[in-house]
Image (cartoon, rainbow, N blue to C red; front, side, top):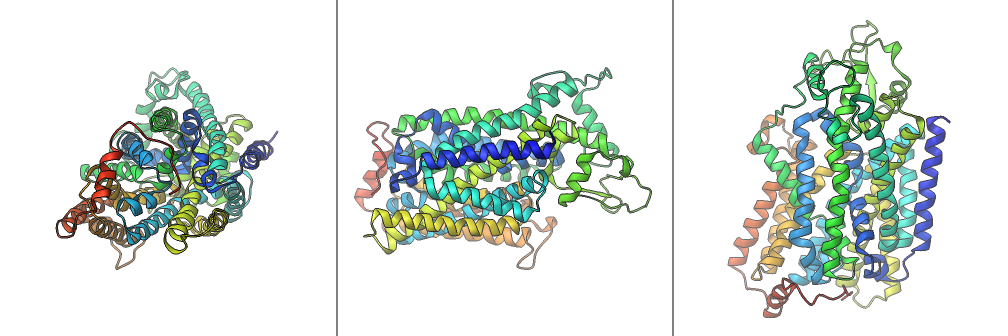
Length: 564
């Protein structure tokens, strides 16, 4: 069978599975819709959390970024993995014990203020929409190549699928769908990695294969060959970085603390029965995530080596089928500037004739390595599983922020449970449409967009959550001022240097040499400073709030999450 036939078959089977699970586990109450009834087992929650966490950025874009950034791309590995540890150990158990469904719900109650709740809802919407734009873009990329439809049509198909199981099943449907999606995406990521590792080095473990000798008898190590191919073409050596230490630190920190403030990951810890189960599922999720994260650097090395070996100074007419197929998507383009019929892929932009989108590297990797069609199709199914699982989690955050945190808690406290459930579903529908628009008109490649979402979460939520848990004297005025300053400063910097607004600016103009992806660290510090400074000149929180803060740090006695 052809790659396209295999793709239709595998994607069709996985989509049917997701829809079947959504129908089986459809939500019948707001508790089902928001936290899957609060009775998910640690194993199931660990797998669902891993799928929720490993988005299109992890599956599709991360290895693509590392392929082109080399050593500098390691910031994504360090930041995202370290951030999950920070979330699991520092915040999740305490938030779970507080017993709130959403981050705005925690902030609204902890800071005893409707204004704080509204600010938190606005921050959650900004973060979630920025993040979901990357997921829908990932869906469009996969569909455009493997189902041979244009990216916009691919985004629309993805919107319909996500809408169906997110709106019907809520968190209950999403949780069990994500368990299936984890199995699909991890199998799809590992199978080609193992195949190519054996093919190139004879070692079946990709993590070890990356540092092994090539099995062509040359006695050359794989990384040495890649360094040589890179420097021959004028690129930096793959194993050497060029980013400043300050920027690497800033990006890593922004990704870490942004992870700890991501609302769609935090809500997963409310779907289990006990605080102990939240800790257990966090540990399991970390192990399951590590399988992909330790393999991604190997995949990037395999993909980049095979790509350079195939295209460097090769006649355009001799290019294999995969090259022509990706050209059709517009994500790989060749312009014969010197009319010699050969592909000149070099670091010099004026002479370079080949443009490659980072997002194609993982998806094209099995084709470049000439693996069987079913493996190529499996990667397509895995990419879709990764993008759809995270998109669904984000859409639930958006719908819960509107229905639970705004409508029920602020504008209409007397709304019935059925009315709130309908409001959540309508909000999710609107969210899918807006997410689809961002997928069709994305502000950058997947991981770049996602990295900005982490910066926004770091700038807004992290200080408010940490101070809310560990500093009982933090009051509503300080938290509100901090969140507003943090999110606005991050948005300003992002718009100025990423989207050339407010007069724009080049890399040389970055403040303190920090990139937009890393500025969340600076905005986070500003949030902390403003929060604590404002707190000094405003009344302390009520005594009962201070007692709640002390209580949530006591390990024992946590019950089920309830919808207050």
